[in-house]
Length: 390
Image (cartoon, rainbow, N blue to C red; front, side, top):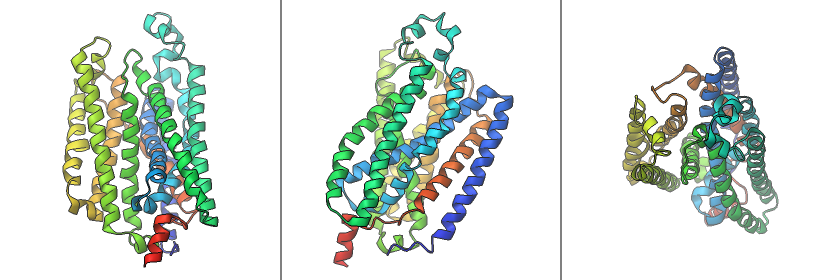
């Protein structure tokens, strides 16, 4: 049932071509960075946060599956596990941002801190050495959880020991809590501190929900691509895509709820240290990006995903998922870029090239990890039960 012979040639082509595109994109970005260093780091940060969001979003998905079960998780389990194994690559790709910390963050520039009392007040937390240590701790936590989830999954395949089900549950409960805390602090460090005078208590939740949504939006088209090949063709049904569509709808609504809650709280408070963050994103052309997000990140996918027929048609659901994934990139761009260009809407060619470069490298690594194991878990309770009834 788990033969992947028909898929291997296609996966190999995707892996090799993505690697070439990724290396070329990063090479061109590096050349661009030679002539425009500050812009390189800004574009790289946007691209990095987008692709890291997909990789990190897989971690709570696999933990949620181990806690709740369900056929939806059985068919995507190998895909999301492969995604978590790309986190060491993302840790390596963070290194350029450490070199660009002084270009990106004004709290990292001693000359700015020396004349700004607010930055001095926050310097105990916002300083380069502590920033680097926290980043290391985040990646250690994420990679450790991913390591054990994947290690025990392989051992479960080999032995079929039902005790692994309990192990997964005991790890996943605290794991989701650790994920939420680390992503919250990471979003503060890497994104919110770009405008160090501004703060929001639910900013981290925007990233948590956005990452899970981006991961679902990525995995659905990949699953659809495999639907016509064994072993996926033997187990996939419209019900699986309906469940995944419902989950994506849930996180679309959660994103909209959190984003609107943050806006409503800050706008009604009308505090001088909070309002400018939104003013920068609602003027000088940035308001059109906000409208784009409102329409195509929420209203359109929300209305389409209400339809059961749309969720059960693979091609339609995949198209919606790809659109949502693109809007996740737009959302990251809208959160980050106005910090650098508050007076005009700016799209630099390095934004696109950096996104392609990191994305090509990440997709190549994802596919390489995917090819290492059977596409369906051999001892998954849901799949074993299905085999016994057929």
